[in-house]
Image (tube, rainbow, N blue to C red; front, side, top):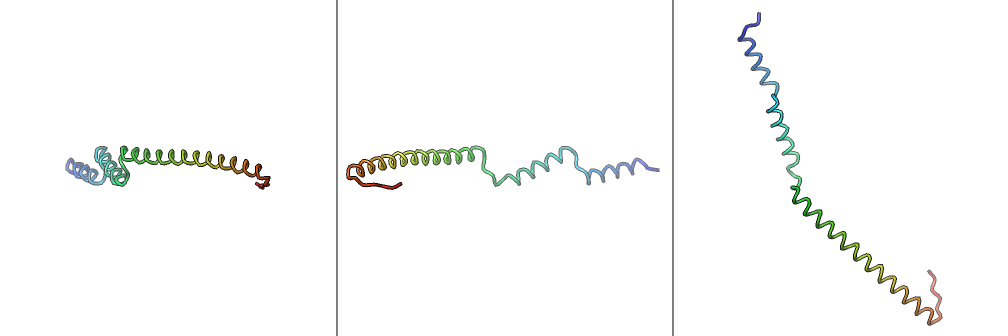
Length: 90
């Protein structure tokens, strides 16, 4: 026959083996903190992304400027070659 003392011992053993909801949540928080500790904070992330966005934007503007210059140079070369009766192959 199972006595009250046996039930107390069993409950104690279950508590040693199985976690309750609060302990499980604490363990999950600890694991998440450990696994994400190397990641930047939200502010750090957005700051770095802002720098990258600015850099990309600056590069795109520079490409546009260079494309415009090349176009002007090409037009200028075409004008000179026509004036000098030179044929330029593409």
